[in-house]
Image (cartoon, rainbow, N blue to C red; front, side, top):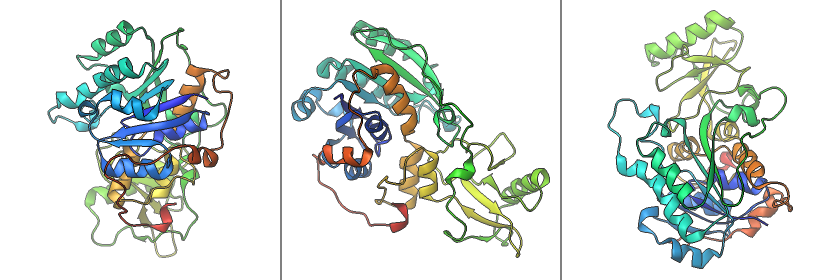
Length: 350
């Protein structure tokens, strides 16, 4: 079985996808303690390290986890993303991507997958990253993948670098056939969550204007989504018949619904956003505040996309033992740092 280690693991989106592909996740590392706690909840037998990758020694990590075949890495992306706007970029954050090579030199995996925002490519040191990987013996293939093409009900374009030390990595990653999953597919049944009148006297004028554009296009009897926070270049609303727009680290999307008392509004909830990322309902996301959970999801990797990338890169011969995710969760270990501190449970999140 393929043994995988997850750098910049967050709450475990890449590892979730790796497990669905049939890999065994033996460890992960992240600088955010809450993220590693969530990771440990979902992969309770993985060796999980809390700390900045540049401050940890990959040799010590390797001694604890044993040899690996696949290194997964989603370096810090905030300082590449266009969502940062005109704010200054922090070069030290962007250079965390180069830590992937430092870990690879010690861990010597055959395969590496690096995931990041597409805006990583114009980074001045991006060519250095590619060349350094090649200098270490890896052949590299660049892919820009949209999660909506892989069964995820969200439009989310991300850069995937597929690296292989022994063969040329694939030039294509097959998309999922059939219709794209619409945003409607993530919604909980009516009545699950509280809602309030759209025009309750406290809404911002911009929110009401976005809703009016939805009414103008669809009428007042059809539910739709509005973009509640953040800039939007498409009118600030979208129908439920297409995939959700990209989830960010903000509580961004509101559901506008008709009712006998006039239009009602509620925000999309954490379980719905988790489904929009491509997680199944078995994801354990019980720690931290609502804002923390949304940040974990918005910073995460869509598991079905990672599954497709791994299956294409590694091949069926290497992934000869498929696992059910519920079984795989019993094959990974516990936190190795400061222990787990429960921050409270919200039953609706499971």
